[in-house]
Image 1 (cartoon, rainbow, N blue to C red):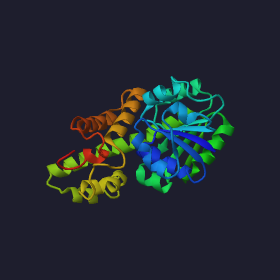
Image 2: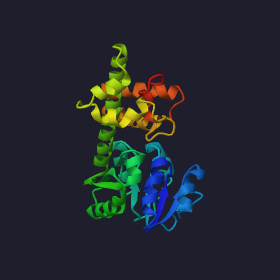
Image 3: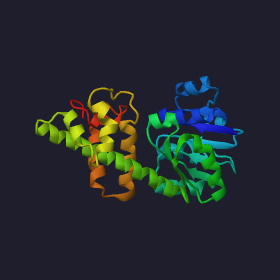
Image 4: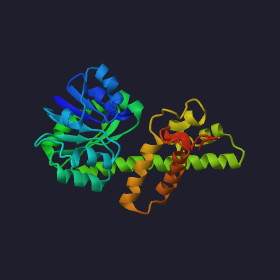
Length: 277
């Protein structure tokens, strides 16, 4: 297929690379240099979203939040009539409903996971639309991104958005739990490595395993897998959707400390690292 891919940041680039062996990609990003890996791999760079979608049989967007989707796609009436639009951007259920009402071919396709699973084609992926035939087409197209057991077709784009927000709620809240476990360890003279070991077999074992290398100083938070800015944006979507979510609000406060300190593009484990978090 001739596919227009809009938004080639860290995640978007990995998703697009999986499509290049089988499809013709025209790529666009607000910062043109961020398309270089894809151009080197065989994609064609477009100078604008309009140029990117010209002649496309399908459009995929991977943008930074719903406001970017509105500006780039919806308000610009960018999607040609009848052309499927698969949006991987994390948005709220209300946003997804709005976009589906504006563009009948809209499919919510949020992905769950960070850069490692993206490179391995082992992400969780929700594919949401009420159009069953379009859903099946989208499921087949995005299969190279997904762990087969975590590829879910759902009946609407808002339902797909809920699935993504729930996944990132679990991530944000468990990261806040690990932050507080490390604080308890520090208050009792327990080393971070011992805290991580003691958390095995508890509800925080997953996040302790995932972020342990950052806590131990084996990895730098610079250029990490999932940025502070990205998960903070998602936490704000959760709060805008549900209102009173005290654990999410606490996690967001910890993330905002990192943004204020100029570490918004660091891995969100910056909130956990002794001397940083």
